[in-house]
Structure formats: structure tokens, C-alpha cells
Length: 361
Image (tube, rainbow, N blue to C red; front, side, top):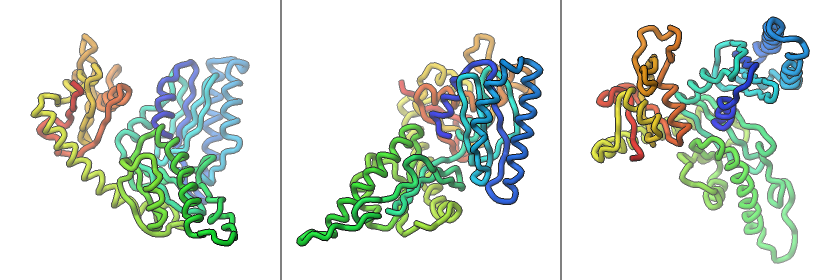
């Protein structure tokens, strides 16, 4: 699931909208339980729909749900499965993080837990360059999962790849092979950028030096590459690649956080900053927050002020009308208005009441 998917889910409003979320298992034999659990949740859903709708009214929802699940192979499960169905929408997502088991019927889809986890976890891409094949992974904290679609994994089927080099006299085979490798990696880059443009995350490259050089020569956006790791990893599994790339990703996170603190200091000097949850909330609602920095474990249950423009801290997070965490609502607002949000080490924003905004104006 990328941010575009999440935004589409969040914008959907129709009654009934059905959300089914439950934790799954990546390995055998535990994943044999997942199909049984899903069947039980579908039965629970049908029972609840029967209490509110006629069969003619709810049957189209069940048909959409059955179509989503009929060909699903639980052998490829990650940590959770999320299903979303309404009369005009259906989608299935494998999630690389655990969620609370829930069946919800509402006028919107249940996205809060997913939004919370995605917002607060470092995410990135890993592109393992090879001619047989190039693989793409999405990293989520220390775990990675391979992205498989109509393009990836991608095999070099041209000359020098699956196809042999021509045998003409006088042909510089080395140059010919290199040119077709570059052509292949241009195809890789185009396919990758289609994914990147829907969810703009940093990129780690893996590959032998020759392939890294080719990709750097033809890639669309070098600025998103945070690390390059040399070597042949054609047969490396997800766990091995995760162990390989996480230190580089974490080093980049630490470097980025130092740069952001410096940027915040400059904004303070230029009087283009704000701090404290109430003030950042107000400027975010106005669309003035270009960048928001927030400590990783800062949470703030709150209610809206009487004029609906500010926040009042809530003593009971579970009381009716209370936002269980206004920080997440604020993040959603900043992202919707084209801003960026970065999580910082706990204690690093103590001078700013744990949250700060760098303003556009």
C-alpha cells in the first residue's frame, strides 16, 4: 500500500463501506490458519449485514469480497491483510506490519491504524540490479517485502541478456552488450519511477559495480539514491537483503535528522517557525507548514476548541469526541496540504515542546 492508495481510501465515503483487517503469517504452517480466520470474519460480516440490510442489498458486497479472496494465496501473506469493499469499490492489501483484527461497517473505510503505522515508520525502496532479474523491494523499518507486479521482477531479454549477442564480423561486442544493458536499465528506471511517483521514498541500490554505473548514468533522479551497496545479490532473500541495507538506511535517517535540526534553527532565526502542538496545529490548518518535525513517541489526545480552530488536551483519551492522538490528525493535514513530516529522536525537540513547524511564509 502506498500513499496514493491510502489517500484514495481516505477520500472514499459511502454507506455501507466494509473494512476487514486482521493479522496474518508469513510462514508455513502458521499461514494455514489465515484462510480459516478470513472465512470466519466473512461469516461475521454477513451476520452483521443481515441485521441491517436485505440479501438483495448486501449480496453485491459479498460478491466483491468473494472475488477479492477467491484467488488469494495465503502462502504469500505478510503480517496483515486488509480488505475494503463498498458498492463501487474493492481493494486488497498485504501489509508488512501487524494490525488489530477488526470488521467495521461504516460510511468510511478504517484507515487510522494503517495511517498511524505508515506515518511513524521509516520506509524506502531497494532496487537490486541484475539482468536475471532486477528485483524491487519496499522497506518498512527493518523488514522488506518484494514488490511483484506487471514489471517487476524484470528480466533483460535483449542481446547480452537472455538473447545472444550477434556474431557479425567487426562488431564491438563489449560496446554492443553495454548499450543494451543501458537500454534494459532505462526500462527498469521507467518502471520504478511509475511506482516512485505514487509514493516518494528514498532508494537503496544493490548490484555489481558495472550495473551500478550503468544505472547512475541513465536514472531519472539521482537525488533519491541514499546508498549504493556493491555485490551480486541475485539469490539473496528478503531477510538477507534487509540485514544488508538497514544499516545504510538508518545512517541516512540519522544524517537527515541532523540536517533537519539545522534547517529548523535557520527557520527560527528567520522567524519562519512555530512550535508546540497547539500552534503547529493552527498553522497546519492554514496550509502554512512546509515541514513538521515531531518526536517519535509524542502523542497528544485532544478535543477541538469551541471555535474549532485550536486544541485542548483531553484527560481521558477514550472519552466521546476525543481525538486519541491529535498528532496523527495533524500529520494527515500537513500531508494533504503538500507538506512533509519527519520523526525525530525523543528529546531532540525539547526546546520546541516536542513538535515544530517550518513555515512557508
